[in-house]
Image (tube, rainbow, N blue to C red; front, side, top):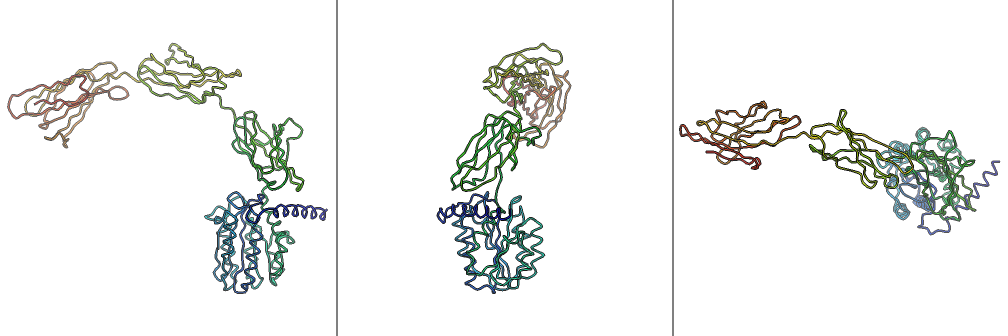
Amino acid sequence: MENRILFTCILVGMFLRKSCGQNSATEEVLNCCEGDILFLLDSSGSVSSYEYSRMLGFLSELLLPFSLGEDQVRVGLLQVGTQPRLEFGFDAHNTQSGLQEALGNTKALRGDTNTEEALRMAKDWVLKPGGARGARAELPRVLVWLTDGVKPGDVIGPMEELREEGVAVLVISTGHGNYQVLRQVVTPPVESHLYFVDIDDMSIITEDLRDAIIEILWAERLQVRDVSTDSAVLQWRPVLAGLNGYYDIRFGPAPSGGVVGGGAGGPGTSPSTSGGQYQRLTRPGDSSTARLTGLKPDTTYTATLTPESNLQVLNPLSVTFTTKPEVLSPAVVTVSDSEANSVRVSWGPLQPESVQSFQVEYSALPGGKLHMTTVGRGQNSTMLTNLQPDTQYLVTVSARHSYGQERAMSVKVCTEEVRPDLADLRLTTVGSDSVQVDWKASMDGLRGYWLTWEGQDGHGSTTAQRSSFYLPPNLLSTRLTHLPPATRVCVWPVYRTTRGKGLCCTAQFHSGPGMAEELQHLPGANSADSTTR
């Protein structure tokens, strides 16, 4: 059985490498993987310049086929010397040309082999998920250590901590490294994650090491996005890109006991559309998405994607998701433009394709006469008129849908109270510092008056002298005393919810005895000042 599995893996690797060989050196061909790879490169004084250049050439060849990017493979390089240095992080290179140029320009550090400090940097910073310039959360992380095996230091403990945090550790030794030590630091299986090779023969392990990395980073994920009431989009890694093949997609209502996803999908690997009604579609090998249509609202579905190819045998992927419940109009009712005798009622969504008509009912509370109006399906608002001022109404918007369903939503709204403006304002100066204030106003809904006065200088600017007070609704006059030589007087009618429109006049006093002059502010003059002397 083990021999059969090994033979299958070798065949898959042969087909994969054949596909890679058919592409140019700058073309990205491996859309198979997603994860972060950190190379720990020994560039201390024990590594000769020749050995160092051979290691860099090995890395270049190893990484050349991978697709790089935020949703693909990302690569970082951490060099080991007296003071270890991050040559470039995961966010540095999203293209093969940039990565290859960076590898070609990398220089050795020399000095001591401070592997322990380099591993601390890797654990606390570079490979830490979610950190600044660090590894991505919830994706595979791989540490590949290239060493000549000379005095690596105490690496067993730090490597164990990395493995416990989910980092896969692979080791390539080009010298006479301690096998017993190195076998303890790698992630099982040792036979595919630990390599002893002469510096001039590194190319013979390139494909085996690449296959080991692919096995760790292989992105067998089928995801669902843009889920609506009647459609959804499947998204997957284009594992057949560059190969002759296609994707077979089947989807249908999930069998009883299916996982409810609440409108979103998650990854899965167990096909489960067999045995029931399902729809089928196909997509070419270079595609990575497919839109599923004709779905029912608030229904759990299972979709299965099967990559079909003569060159590779790939497992089908399956995902379960739930469409969103249908939102029937009216889902929201709002009120605007409220006046004393009218108000605008709006609703949504419009849904002209399914709604036959809207009906708006309204009545005063409590127990008022019911009024009704019908609105066409292409309209989402109407103005209700001939309402009573300062009255609460219950408004109900209902929709009749073409397939027989009805939906209604109600809202309470209050019309504005009637707030008549102040009809007239008269100021009569009395003596040298007093003024008689008279006004006229409608008594409907009146709660009182708000009167203010403030002193002004010779240029019309306000001084610090001012006063305000409230007067009951039965008063239509008052006398102000001890006023400044120039005083601006304003009177506003006060209603239940707010003040109405008021009037203002300015009085100026003369020092002559017995003088009394009258100023009248008539309606239609807005609130501009009139002046008496």
